[in-house]
Amino acid sequence: MSDNCSESSGNRKRPASPALSKFDDLKIQDDSILHEHSDREVCPKCQKSAMYFCYRCFTPSTASAGHVPRLDLPVPMDIIKHEKELDGKSTAAHARVIAPSDVNIYGWQEIPEYENPDQVLLLFPGPDAKTLSEIPRESFTRLVVIDGTWKQASKIARLSPQLKNVRKVTIVPRKTLFWRYQSLSDNYLATIEAIYYLYREYAEAFEMNGNPYDGRYDNLLFYFKFFYNMIQNKYRKENRPYTHRQRKGYIEYDEADSENTLESGEVESGDLESGDSETNDQTSGNAARTAL
Image (tube, rainbow, N blue to C red):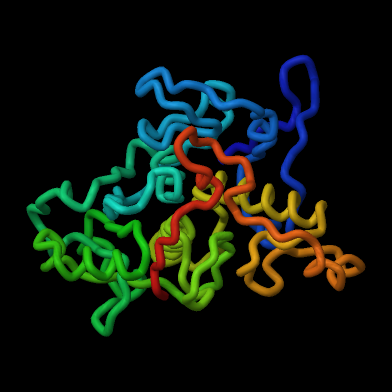
């Protein structure tokens, strides 16, 4: 996996996301090209306005084309998106942009009929859910993830006949870095976080041969890292809360400023510039409440 150099044409150095401890150990491609985006552009395919990528056509912006990582995944994935989830709030789109040959996104009413459902693994918790390390590799050919709130995901899993006979897979519990407020515990991940950890655990179970994980799927978090750092940098610099419901400790303020933070003016997440012409939530991702 190659990393893009931080030098652009003409040897002009672009600003990169400051290294934060949350991502220090991950091998994520340089995202400095995204910092140069200042205006939305019209997608040549659908004519909709977006800044960083088109989440209808799942193509990078013209300005960043060629600088966004591309991944080949070992098992194809279908993402089932609840119809009430806005496109601009879905971090699932990150996976489709970065791994276009292996990731498909379907609306709930468009779930395909799986010819061999017993060979499909649905990422969903439950007493019958197993980790990938407990499942023989030759027994599955496709992964499925549901994109929606926990309530929406439960409804899709329960009511979709196409998913009735698939097997369930789960991942090791982890803490989310997702920036949108949720009333559930911080063990509920954003969609792209859940997808990343699923493929990471795949590598650990079937590809590493007992060696430590080598970062081969870290680029799935390319956009997630960029948006996370953008939010951290903006609100830490201005020394103000992200929202009035901000999770304690989420914004990593300088220690000297932290005591005064709650006295600053509070803002909602929509105040942070997004890339969509219809909603201010591209940087809000999507709460894919995948319980771990």
